[in-house]
Amino acid sequence: MKNKDDIVIVSAVRTPFSRFDSAMMDISSIDLAVIVMNEVIRRVGVKPEDVDEINYGSCVMAEMALETDIPVRQASLLAGFPPEILSVTLDRACCSSLTALRMGYRAIKAGDAEVCMAVGAENMPRAPHLAPGLRKGVRIGHIRLMDNLFELGYTAKGFAPVSVDAGEVALEYGVSRTMQDEWAVKSQERYAQAFAEGKFKIGEEIIPVVVPQKKGDPVVIEKDEAPRKTSMEALAKLKPVYGSPTVTAGNAPPISAGSSALLFMTRKKAEEKKLKPLATIIASIGTATIPREIAVIPALSIQQVLKKAGMTIEEMSLIEINEAFAAMPLVSTKILADSNEKKWLELQERTNVNGGAIAIGHPVGASAARITMTLAYELRRRGGGYGVASICGGLAQGEAIILKVE
Image 1 (cartoon, one colour):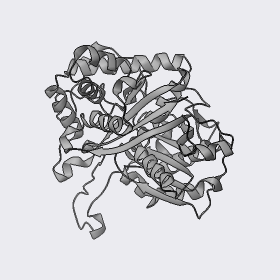
Image 2 (image 1 turned 135 degrees about the vertical axis):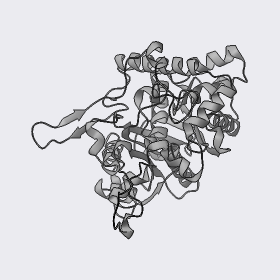
Image 3 (image 1 turned 180 degrees about the horizontal axis):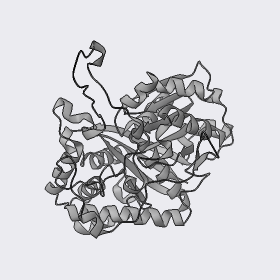
């Protein structure tokens, strides 16, 4: 039964996700955010002044530092939103744009807002090398540069690279390197089929990025740049990264740039504006566990959000689990299946049916909103139903959301 207090997503859009060496690599994450912030309201005729709150997730702070501070404040002003609008920039690693949605969801539930926007933006290839200590001066000798994309910086404070944690935990759950490579091939194949069927098209999930050139016509990026053909034979030749027992460049996503945005409001407000909801938010939850269990946290998050909603995994027509590595959907679906082999295989068939981040890319701050909109659009194509999306974040943080599409 529909309730006027339901919170509904009315618009959802993202840029294409890039390769590492893309023409997008010189566009700031702030400017990528401006693109989707403008488009997500334009599509449904919502005015900037109608939005009460914008929450914005981004994680690669070294890239944001090139514009110094408060990227959401800068982006909202550059996008033409009123200076009075409330906004927050947050970093919850890959979970960030779903955390941004959950903050807006709470604001609406509390009666502090009616219309909110969740944004995620990242340009990982643009992250600069750092020269710590240089401000003090170097009298003689070499300058040391640091790359905070290397191992994502976790080892600086004694944590293991996430690829090591994910690979080791995967093996403990009986998920082999071969299984992870098989999932990676499947992700690429599913994306290729979905793209051929027109599922990732301009005007639905995607808006193009136009990159001006000093000479000649601008470069127009209209599709995800990372998908590629591969095979088990090709993946088997790749060496594991950062000391992981199983994770390679082939069964992990590429380092990417991209942005995403979700616009949501009360059903009452949507009806006033004569907007048809894309999806109803049934429940949303944030989680965390011990840092090593990053491959497990999507399953724990799904279990908790299902419990909150009083639902079961059997009621979910589709599942999205972000492919931070192939280990994540494989370990998590095995946990959700309670190690029942038949059920595990069945859950895998319902998970990431159009491919995932291994094919699409993973600009970390933007990915949680991406899996949410991918889920909503696919449920709509299938005539509706319930679906759940979940994502892991660095050091075993998690987010999950249940959507219903009429």
